[in-house]
Length: 510
Image (cartoon, rainbow, N blue to C red; front, top):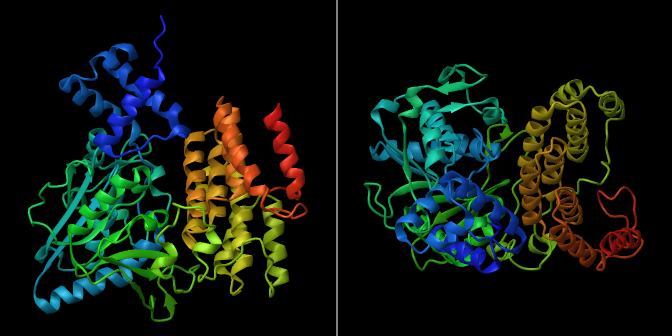
């Protein structure tokens, strides 16, 4: 019996998902949508045809969406994700806020981790607060964490994690908060778990939910790596709700790929190295920019590899990721390193030793030298890290390769190349969905980044999705047509633009 979904049925379910969750499945993700529907129908023990026949029934729709959401909203997260952000929270934002509240004799803090997934983000905040507040028992701390996925919230409440959740080096001592249990897992101590209140919240529909303090009362809202999946209208509505939850002077933090979504909602951008925040301002005051020095005595707080703070005007980023401007045009006032350029003052003996260790598949020794290096050549350090990551992956040490990929991403979150490198590590393990997610992030950073389009096309080709592969090959052709024929493009193994275009055309004709 044919149990496939016709186009009209797919459009119907797609529109229902958009209405109820704000998540938009475009034409490139039709296969993902079909897979999620099939999984939900399997759980319900019904056919897809039966699902469509019952979809108008409100009781069935409620149950169906509950299960479907569990499949379409499983996110990737880990403790202290985006190390630079958490270092900034640790060294600047939270100490300043705590000091201000002490002066006012108002010992309270109000935080919201929206779309919290399996809980690593709010628990990271909880551990950070316990680290900063010696007298934490005297404080009234409200730390709410919400998600639309009930299953993943249940996991978050349990506080049980595998090594995969610890891909970033902790920025504070955390061992005393975890105890080992069976199967290489650890359980979070109740002293941290009890600091976080988990609730099921649909960001699109639950815009009037109460957290007990009324509107405009929160100090900090984190909503990272979720707005990008909403339609433009829905994301604007959600951002308005998030901003309205903040007090004047409170901060909304989204992922760097999402900063262009926040436009005209009475916020101004605060730029601290590679960290971007949106500060709520008095309504009508207008958006602006606030740049400040992000340094503690003797060291830039963002990290030992951090970039210096540069000026980015709000108008330079308001359309980030949503039009056809190039990455370089949008960030024309930001000087960032070109990874593929050689350094001018390389310490030759040290670099030869590092390169030799990478060639000999000894990345641990190479990383040790990089960590202890006194060279101020930033570009060389980046290239050495890339070599070590490739070496780890080549040796099958994927967790180390991924960990250092995250560190490389944190150095410059708006550079598409580190995402490509991490995607290659996932690709090598056959984790194609994870790889595609990273490649899409690469394209959020630079929509015309040729290597990402080629990598996506390659994954779709080998996973039996030729139409999607052709789409990205055609996008690659469009990019190549804007280049000089003889130019050698990044990550193309020395192939000139015209030769690469000819090779892709052959694939499209095949």
